Length: 237
Length: 303
Image 1 (cartoon, rainbow over the protein chains, first blue to last red):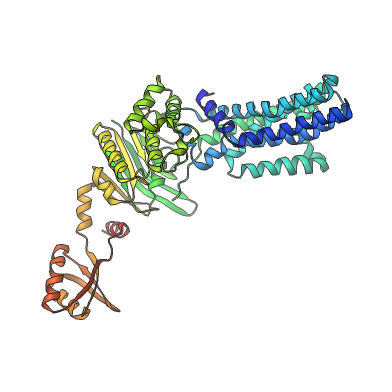
Image 2 (image 1 turned 45 degrees about the vertical axis):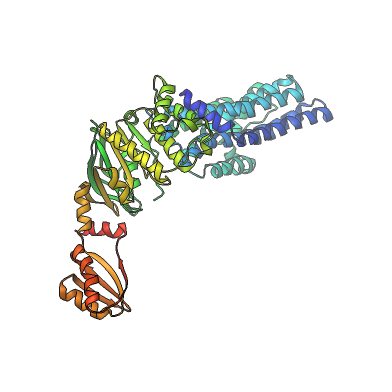
């Protein structure tokens, strides 16, 4: 990893108005958690529903999308990436540094708020807070790698990523059993289930979930580095 | 001594051929890459800078292929045409970051030196987003110069500069050329190239149209047959007189204008007024019809 690339990307991601967007969803999650705790008291079923549907189902994929496509994609679009690429730094190193920034962002803005929301609603009961937070972290890391790769592959990464997150994971995943098996969310839920108990539903078992997460993460990162090595800059001519 | 060598390089995008079988060698000194808009200059610079693989042929820097070879950036600096930068940084931060990315031992000192070279020390504390177009251009220059490269590629560097900035950049490039660096810049304006480039490479429609000493090519350009459009009180009589005196090797009447092709430009310029006076013809307009760079280029390609 390259410290300068890390620093530049962190400033680029957090130093702009987009950073407020990153605070919006976790803010809503924490607010909901507080309201639920005050109105309904501590209820593990409600905690599972909120953390499953909102934290893992919405917050994590959206933040993964914003940060994964946001750390490198805009630079490729506007051409400023040339200042990174015209340097004696290997392109996979650039990808890994960018990915690190995205992972830091999902950890802070998705996994950590999930942990806090779980603690607010149920404390440490049933391992729910920790289970969902770990699930959010592994899902977030996988999403970042996937969406970062998308942003190297296509200029429409945000749209393609949204389609995947909304249509594949949410709609199809809800109706088509096979689609559920190929879903980052379900793989992460397998990890959550391992920590927080069998009340949590997951379409795949733990070994399958973990292997698929690792394969997706490593494969996406490797391929993104490869594609960035042969990135062509087109002129306006 | 560093040399960029293009060997039978072609590049196409789908059905469109942007660069067509170009062989050229860019050595130390300032070289101007001249051509009309859309001729393939930017494509060539991207090929030379390692940002585009040739569809055919090879591009090499001192024998090393430039495509997929990030080590070339130790000796190569690139000033892109596009303006996007990390404009949330200050000019100083941007140049320091570039020095760090190059792995220089003292990034701060290198940045100070580069900023001083382009005369941007004063505004370096301001955010890049507040800079004028000319200042952005100079900061881009500083990022490309920060590691003291032996080869500098500049894509349309004079675009958007005011005359004073232009003068300064020309002086800078000239100095770098004298230092023995290989400097290549693209331009579609003849006068820019004329002032500083010792050598020029002319590309037209993706083809290598001319190459060599600037003055040689300039002579070819001025000696070409010039086309003129004239309007007078008696076009027919004027046309006859011009042909009879041998000032033209062709005339054509079209509506109320006379198109004349001057064979010998100085002679034509002398003869038109004197023939008009002798024939008692009033001249309303005498204008060159083909002074555009495109027509100069197409003449060069044709010859």
